[in-house]
Length: 71
Image 1 (cartoon, rainbow, N blue to C red):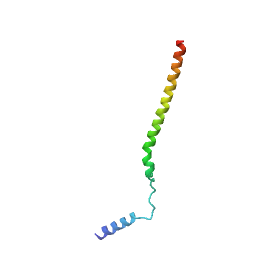
Image 2 (spheres, rainbow, N blue to C red):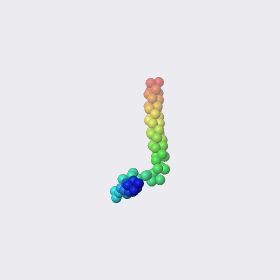
Image 3 (cartoon, rainbow, N blue to C red):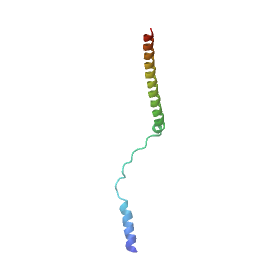
């Protein structure tokens, strides 16, 4: 019984070594976490606006072509 207790104590002390803990990834700040979803939504909105501008431009070009053919 003494041997088991001594062995258990040695194992417990051996687990507490002087090694520094492994570095962990630093969590993002609260401001970064809060704005991240909005940033993605703003980028999507800007892409949608750019696509709409492109569609409007092509539609205007087609209308000009149709008017030129009708004359």
